[in-house]
Image 1 (cartoon, rainbow over the protein chains, first blue to last red):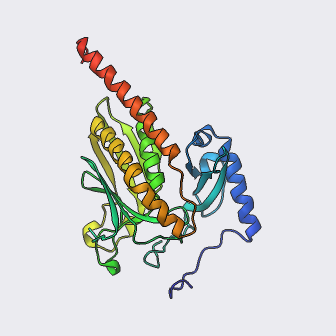
Image 2 (cartoon, rainbow over the protein chains, first blue to last red; image 1 turned 180 degrees about the vertical axis):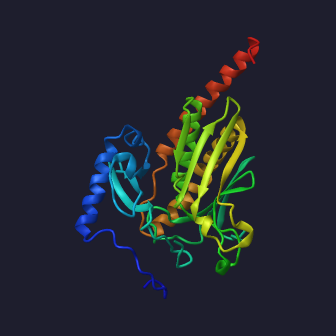
Image 3 (cartoon, one colour; image 1 turned 135 degrees about the horizontal axis):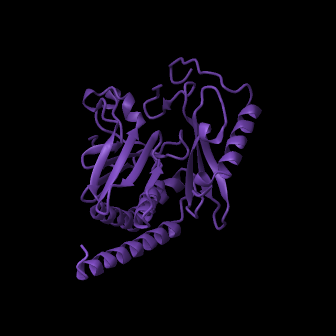
Length: 103
Length: 200
């Protein structure tokens, strides 16, 4: 239940651990792919729009995951700010500004 | 367009960016400011909901990331790379920048959020392609970036601080701006020299 609206969310992961493992696997594989790794070119902010098929990862209901990385202040390493699924049959999209599910 | 009393507008010949600073959206941590991006009257970022007044409004975005990516597009174009794909730090969106030839640039856009609009005049306008003169695009982005860095970055930083967020340091963005400007000046020199040699 979100803002008075009931929505049955599709269940893709059975536990938080499973989700973390999945995200780790995607990031680790993406970093081995030059197309994604090359995005870390010194920019202060990096968005990776990762196509799971391209990495040979299969997850029912999710096709694309996006990761936002920020550069550590005064350093050269990056940390993960946020990650979310972007496309796929089980991806539900909620627009917080209007408080509504759009898909 | 929504009447934004509290907004920042960055305007070039073709590009117009409106950053709504009246709200700081904490629900999407990486995209706190609603942003409208219009290029040649086409809506590359922005959306419309009838319950919000039925007017074009911003969609979650990050101004710093947007300018960083626009400068990266220039860098890629000036270094003659074939294409540049980015989200421009606009939530739900995808863009592909591609040089048609030496003088024109194509932007393929998919502004997914607008595809869910319930405002009839914006239905079906979420996807498309814009073509514009490369030189004018480069000059627009340089002008807008400089204006943002000089005039508005401190204002954005102030809002971020008020919400307990650490503001970006703009040194890197300045560095990127100077690098791209230099690349552009060099490439226009080459064009001028080629013309003097009768090669244009």
